[in-house]
Image (cartoon, rainbow, N blue to C red; front, side, top):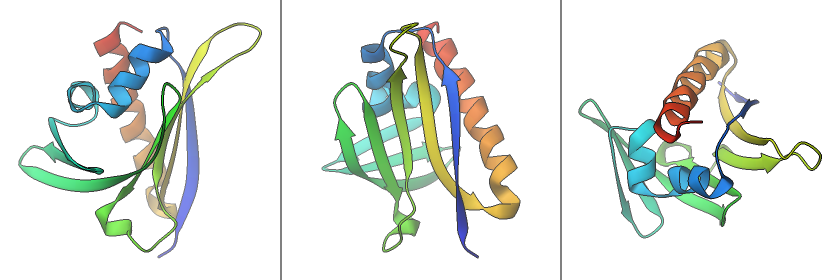
Length: 126
């Protein structure tokens, strides 16, 4: 079944540098995204309750965005991306997540991202 692209945007009251550290570093990611994270080269291994999944870091713009591709999605155009956007007028900081899921799993995937983003906000006080 083909996956559909979806996006979630959430305001985060924190500095872009702090947020970016939580998106790229193993210690930052293990505070909100997974129980533990290891990196070897461009491959991040995420651990949850005895399960593990690996993703390749496809793109990283310092202080701005990271894009990963799950090992299971190799040879596809699917990825997940976390980007930091700053409103020019208000200076509000938003985290924009782009991901892909099968059509009947999009609502569940959004709920999972929302839950993880709440953990991120708690971890950074944002």
